[in-house]
Image 1 (cartoon, one colour):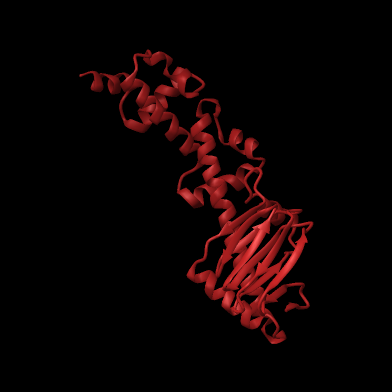
Image 2: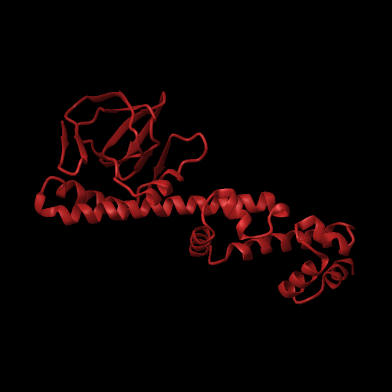
Length: 250
């Protein structure tokens, strides 16, 4: 059986075999399996989604869902988001990905249970709204965690060409204040501090494991001048690059 409440939230409750034909949506679709397992076919690939998991489908992804267990239920809806939140939600997908699954947690299970019981009770609208807002908060957090991992990987792979927060912000097409805030919340470090950490780690390697002259190290780690390298190294390790190298030579 398929129900839809006044807010456009679709609720599927299977009684034996149920299969929805192939279709797609013009915006990101969010799916919650509240009981059992639902089998999604997404662009030709079979993807099982278990109780408590959250499945996000990219806009225009061709998919269908099949339910074979009588106890399986799921909730599916599209959020009416403002432009900023829609952009954030879309960022969860890696290049070429058409779906993303957020694993089940005890908190997700509890919220989904509340949603299931409250969905068609008009007096429980506040519970429904709070549940959806909470779940969207989890989606935002997942997007942000993924973005922080991407930022770290980008800096590690390109630190020689990265000089500032602005370089990172331009690459990911987010404002400097936004990526700085989520990075610091996730890691406890500023992006500038993380960039310097990577540069200094590589400087230590070059000083201890190679014969590159100290005066040329700045060029190999992406600092703008020899003076900037000396200052940052001394500030980080409380000794000069020359003394650091001497320590390893002796």
